[in-house]
View (spheres, rainbow, N blue to C red):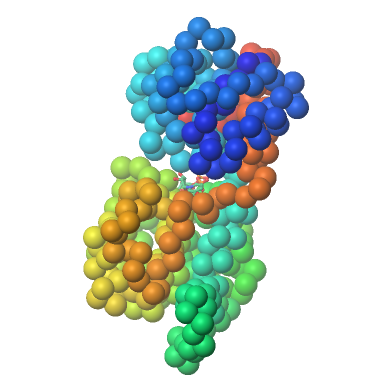
Length: 307
Ligand code: NAD
């Protein structure tokens, strides 16, 4: 197949890497720059990180992300361009990112790393340090990300609560709550981890009332999308010591603006939406594209299709 590789992918990895992977599976690849025309070039598929209108001229666009909330679904439907995404490949990376943040907050590693730059031997207050064993984590959304977090938290001896719409048991999860029980689910949890897609239902679902329901020594961890959290309410909760801190991989505006107050908190860990990255991401996505290319060649319907 003839596959275009859009250079917006460079946010995650060098586009040449996935081009080489796809070529090693028998496909012909061209790296496209933003603004390059796709019309009439014979592409069967364009693999991309982000959307631009030129992509609508391809019969099939594959997004290398799980979340496709930034794509104009109606335009894809209008132009009959198939849009597929990359779910099911982020359990390990995000699971490890979240547990990294959890352990850093508990063992205070982020504070020591901060002080290291000032040659500062200062020790954290005795009561600030804790172990995560026997602490409770509440995972909101139990798809790929949520399950990856739940299994790893369970392995560390944490009590795992989950918020999900269907009351179906999930490995590693001790107690399930429905979305309308969110306040009960977060109360008493030391960590609240957001793993839901950004939808009409989840937009700003973490608001002032949720922060009020959380314990004062609790941490919010957002690896989902910035829009799931009402950012003003988060700032108020941090300023008012309603929560202890936050680990934020996803932000309302990305890159997080240089003048955002969020940069300044001792107990906020900011990462630039990289929680799912690893040195094998291009292969994980490449395998999804190869499998779907085979389906397309066989006249079968595409997997992981959102439009
Ligand atoms: P997924 O589809 O496997 O799981 C999402 C889960 O959330 C599903 O089980 C769904 O039923 C549930 N859900 C939806 N609305 C809900 C609600 N109101 N309350 C409770 N549960 C609800 O998706 P995933 O791969 O786990 O990814 C989830 C989201 O995380 C993506 O949509 C994306 O926005 C984000 N994400 C971020 C990164 C990153 O780099 N930080 C990486 C991958 C995904």
